[in-house]
Amino acid sequence: MHTQSAPDEFAQHLTDVFRLFGSISLRRMFSGYGIFHDGIMFGLISQDTLYLKADAENSADFKDQGLSQFVYVRQGKFIGLSYYQAPETVLEDANEAALWARRSFEAALRAIASKAKPVRSQHRHET
Image (cartoon, rainbow, N blue to C red; front, side, top):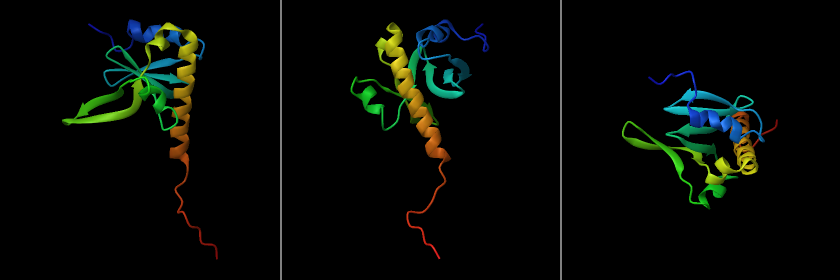
């Protein structure tokens, strides 16, 4: 029986993969794990595949390499999240892992910052 509390071998291996980036923590979610740094999720593991956070600033890095977006099915519909499959070099080279992790962590920080901004109208009327 698979225990929910202990990360599987692949997930646990990522703590070594990302050692040059910094400490990470793993949390069970979906049918895999969320990957966190300083309490912010920048990656996920699903079916032994590593996905990293992407946004408008770094998604081209993933697309240029033909890497696929994380997609799941909910109520018969395909839902894509802003995570893309990590390049193989991330798992093979600690420097590459640190570089891609930093970019994805920064994308996660930008996503948080964009949600935190108060919504204001384009035109301000002063009286």
